[in-house]
Amino acid sequence: MKKIKNILSEIHPTIIETRKGSVTSYLEITKTNGKYVLNSDTANYSFGGLHVLFDTFFKQMRVKQYDIRTVLLLGMGAGSVIALLKEKYKIECAITAIEKDDVVIELAKKYFQIEKHKTLSIVNDDAFEYVKTTTKKFDLIISDIFIEGNVPEQFASPEYIHNLKRISNKNSCLIYNKMTEDPIHKKEVKAFEKLFSDVFTGAETHKLIANDSENSLLYYNTLLLK
Image (cartoon, rainbow, N blue to C red; front, side):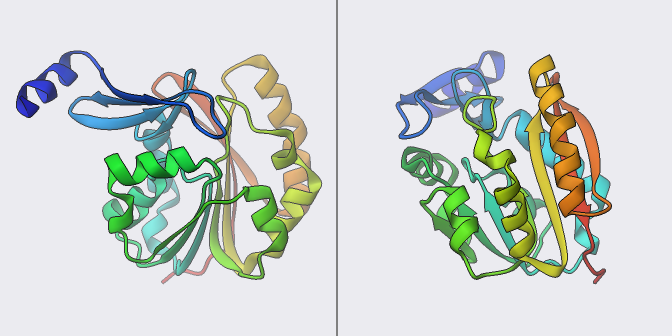
């Protein structure tokens, strides 16, 4: 029966489970091309377009060449970024993953075996509060926070960006992901770029297309090579 379901998923995506999240009102596990994917009602959360997006960008930045020992992932989802860093790119690092939605964490454990990563620490917390209060510092910080396709206002605030700077090591990398598919999001990222570059001097914006959807990645990097 499992083999038949896998074959059918390659023909047409199969909905495996739907849930109401504690943050996102609708969450859906589908099986596509024999693999699980986590979606909201309107956006991919993990192992779909976002997985392709980060894989593409990690290749472009040549992530394997840098000395990365500590990673902070703000917005874990089901763990696309974790799987890429640990499994595909073999980065030997400790990852702290912040995820506010406890149902997302439950689904990540159930379908994506997120707990198999021994140097991963999952924190069920609000990312805004976490970066405001933590005393830890990180080599690589990735901000990948959405509710549906929107980044909540506080995650584009000066306080949030200054806190990201505060918890960055002297030699560090910051990747901030924002969907820019529609005109409203394009205007938002234009305004946000100035704030980001004022705090992270020399930051760049990279526009990438993944599964016909445009995202802008704001990128700052002073990491040392291995």
